[in-house]
Amino acid sequence: MFTLLFTFLAFAIAQFGLMAVVSKGYSYLGYAALITLFIPFVLHWIWTRGKDM
Image (cartoon, rainbow, N blue to C red; front, side, top):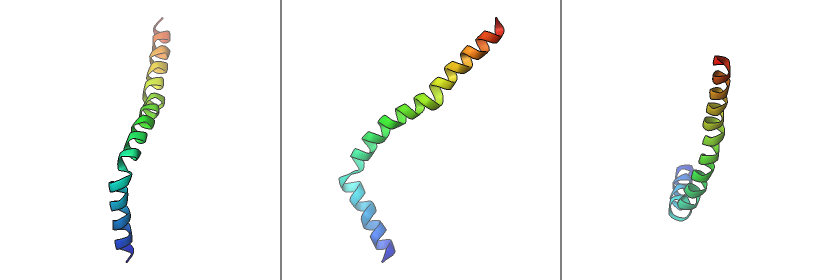
């Protein structure tokens, strides 16, 4: 019974709401990449550039 419930839940999400979740998720993924990749890269570049001078 438990497996049937989760299977039906997964099917319902895939049929009715997956595109909404994916479209929201990609926008938040962009913000997360900015915070975790781009900003540390720029700070590291500034820090190492300052040491060379």
